Figure 1 (tube, helix red, strand yellow):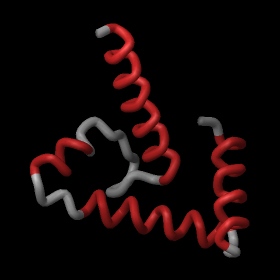
Figure 2: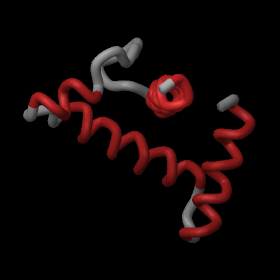
Figure 3: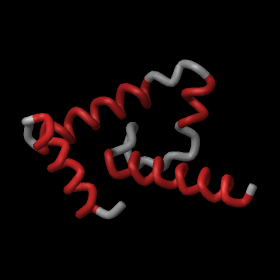
Amino acid sequence: MNRIRMNKVYRETAKKFGVSTKEVKREMQAAIAEAYNSRESQGAAEAWNGIECKGEVPTLEEFFFFVLEKVNEKVSVDVLD
């Protein structure tokens, strides 16, 4: 997902909920940080394995690219099975 498409997602989400795109990004980043920092169970910790992030917590873009990569892997495996 490129930056232009991500910005469209932010704009559409903001419009749907009647908030600014800045608020959408802030809330999404807060949710990612909370989930990333509360990896208490082994399953939750494993779900985050392999994510590359420059800081202590993945950015929105790092998170989205990670998720898209996981989805692509899953689709590829399902197609090959």
